[in-house]
Image (tube, rainbow, N blue to C red; front, side, top):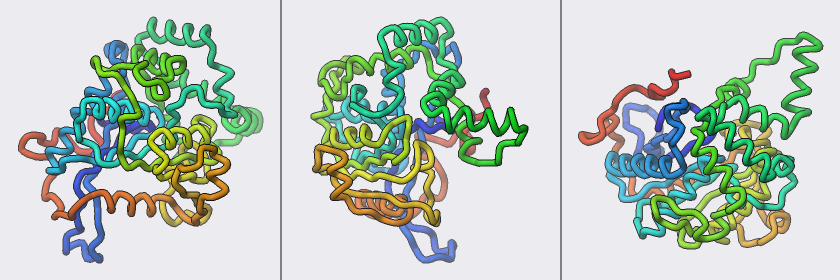
Length: 344
């Protein structure tokens, strides 16, 4: 299910390796990275559910392990991709399968009944959930534009009225902005996966062991024991940072929590060199998020460099960079970013 650019994805990191001498730069550690991005489904994939995505993620993990020769991988998931990732690592833990070394989660809420100040809670009632499930079931998919409109109405002053006044009333062309261009590339959800995600709201399985099973395996986050690194955004209106902090706490009080300035996307798209960037870092030993901020340490710059150091410490011995992608068993089937990106 790889190929389409989306905010909701997993990234698997195999062995680290060093740059070759012909790079003419000082040797620095790199990581072999494999991106699992969700295919934009059509009504033909209406029956793909959470169990389908977990099986595909397991297949991708095994492929990355085989290609790199690593016994385990460091795995990252953002937003709803963090939900599938957490389900996956709990599914592995229940079976005592050791494929994961460290977990990295970004802007992901697992406690679906978390007490937050998000306007999203006003949209969630048994009636609205039933109506949403029936609509996607009839169409076979949840249309990406419908999902985008729902998120926009969660912050209407910035995401609706601002453009209505500037573009429609004043006739001004919107400024070119790469993040907004990328954000406009919406992705759909299969009807069954949409229904599975909606069911999480009321079953809250990550907080209630045994409420969800994948391929007959009960999900219990208490069995997950991995080094974990979690990122939240200070002004995130989709996944409020205090709810993301609860996600970090769910992985244990030794989890590293990063609070990055900005919102849902820009807190992540935060490369080094941004003069406005800063982040707060600390272990999740405090039960209360506000108490955590009082003790956590503020840093100037991008959290990416801290994350790179975190990965390096958990990537084992460095090896020579591969001369070609893939392996004899998993041969490349095309150039990056894949073929799904060409599908509407």
